Amino acid sequence: MSTPGPVQKEMEGLLTAAFPDAQFTLSNDSAKHHGHSGDDGSGESHFSLNIEWAGFAGLNRVARQRAVNKALGDLPGQRVHALAIRATAPGE
Figure (cartoon, rainbow, N blue to C red):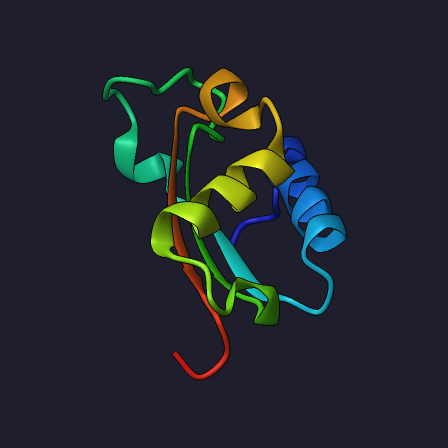
């Protein structure tokens, strides 16, 4: 397991602040995309997020993804090329 880089650490901090008590795993998948479109050579261009948070209860998939993207601000689309999001409420 590699040490998280500055982009991953920033994302983790933003997620922790926006989703109190959430359980999440943010995985850096950039090595799998080396040389592909969107690979900027930083080693932090592609991520996968699994997040479970009670506040997602009653929200549909699109609303949950919008909430995550809002929490991350300009990171997706600016410094992060791709972010796969799996957002669930407890018990789902």
